[in-house]
Structure formats: C-alpha cells, structure tokens
Length: 344
Image 1 (cartoon, rainbow, N blue to C red):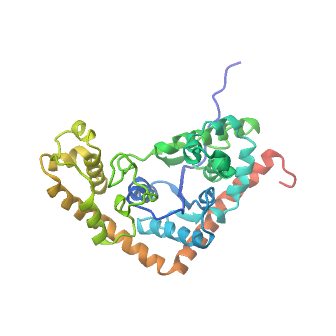
Image 2: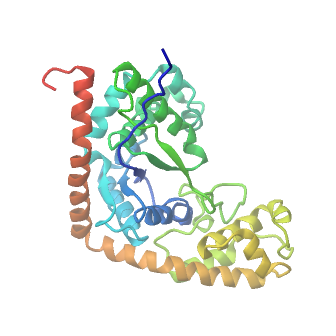
Image 3: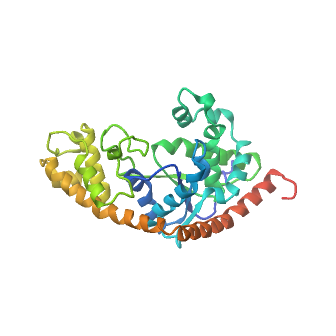
C-alpha cells in the first residue's frame, strides 16, 4: 500500500482583506493596503470588508462607529476600488462571520492563542482588563477568511502569525471532520515596498493614527496645502541624500522619505537615489511634496465628496453585504452539516 498525497483545495482563487473603522486612515494605510487592494481587484476575485466586529474588541463610541465604517468605505472607493469589481461590505452585516467563528473557537486550541504576540502587545500589563474578544479575535479573523474560502490574504509583518493560525484551523477542521481539502490553506500576499511607512516626526516609529501629533502622518482627508506642509516639516538630518541603499538604511528619517517617494512613484529606493543622491532635503522635500499632492489630494477630494452623500455609500455597502452573504452562506451551511448540527 502506498502513501497518498494529501488532498488540497481545488476551488477558485479568491483574496480577502479588511481594515478596522477605528480612526482616520493615513498614508501608511494607503501605501500598505489600499493601493494593493486596487491592483488585486483586476487580477483575482476580491472581497474587501470594513472590520467593525474587530473594532469593538476595544471600546468604540457607538454614536461614531457607523460613520467611521462609511469613512473606510469612502477611502476604499476613493483609492480606486470599484464596487462593481470588488465586493465591499461591513463585516457585521454578514452574520456568517460570527457563526463560523464560534465553530472555529471549538476547533482552535488554547495554546495556539496563547502564542499570539499581538494580544500581549495590545493588552500590555493589564491583560485581565482586556476584552475576551481581543484575545480571541484571531479566530474571528480565520472565519473572515475561510467563510469565503479565500486562498490569498495580503499581510504585513504583524499579521503573518495570524495567517498561520488560520492555516492551522483550516487544516485541523479538514482533518477532524473528515473533509480533506474542504478549506484552503490561505497563502500570504506579501505587501512589498511601501508596506511600512514610518512617522514623519520619528523614523523609528510606524505612522499611526494614534500619534498625538497630526504632523506625524498624512491623513487621506488632508487637502493639498496640509500634505505639502507636513512634508515640509518632516524630520530629516543635515546630510545630503547618499548614493547607496546601505548608507540610506542607517538614516531612519531619510530612509522613510525616500521610501515614501519610491512607493508613490512606483520606483525602487535605488532608482530614487539615482536621481537625488548628493542633493539636500531643500531639493528633495519639494519634489516629494509635489508628488504626494499629485497622488493623494484627489483621494481626499473624492473621499470628502462621498462622505457628503452617505446614502450613496450606504447603498454600496448594502449591495456588497448581499453579495458577500451569497458567497458565505453555502460555506456555513455545509460546515454545519460536517459538524453534525440538527437540521443542517
């Protein structure tokens, strides 16, 4: 008797990702996620959601949450996502996410969650005061992905561990319920250049919406004047730009600005240095500001227009939710049969 190769998933390719509606989006989100989503919609069946279930793992103002959801949807569309190509929807509008998450909580092992480093980082010294949802949300994340049988997930460095958990859950479910190849083992789509944009005030810290200084980031809703002013005030050093990537890597703020220029221009850092090596920031910053305004000001303008007509955004989200439910419902129904639930 010969060993048989394991059965692999044979369904269609599909990509899924989402962003939490927990604050204004900025340049880091744009380069690290939104422009990547826009490209993917032309290459693969694409599901992009607003992760409002994940957002409430920490306190959110109920009076603001729905509007924050619209803001994320507006950013998606303003950045180039086409609701006729990509499925754009609020996570909470598709109950199959939460239903499958409970089943997966019974598949996942406690030790797997204990190893999740993000919970340790987010809870800090007060993990006893953290919500249970903050601890278990990687299981919900697995359900987000697998309820659509997504085969690919865009990930940054901080999400690789969660994707591994998703693969573990998928593999254990397939084994435990004698359903080889039922769920795919999703593959990461590495974000590439521009995925990690640092603060304009501190090149060692990631650009963040929680930074108290608004000059640390470029918000997607900033107008042309604000974008140019923030680039002008970005922290630098007194030396001209170097000739090599190796020299640039030792200068955090310079490296960050060159990286932003490269990502916005669709170039490599080496190509940017080929144009600007030996030149000071008095030359480089105006060029970067002009490029940033060219790329980002239209996004902010379109976002403001969309947010001025919430009924249009709500209609897009409702259509997306209906389409997402169509894709998710058969998966959950079959999972219930595999698990053995009555009536399934």
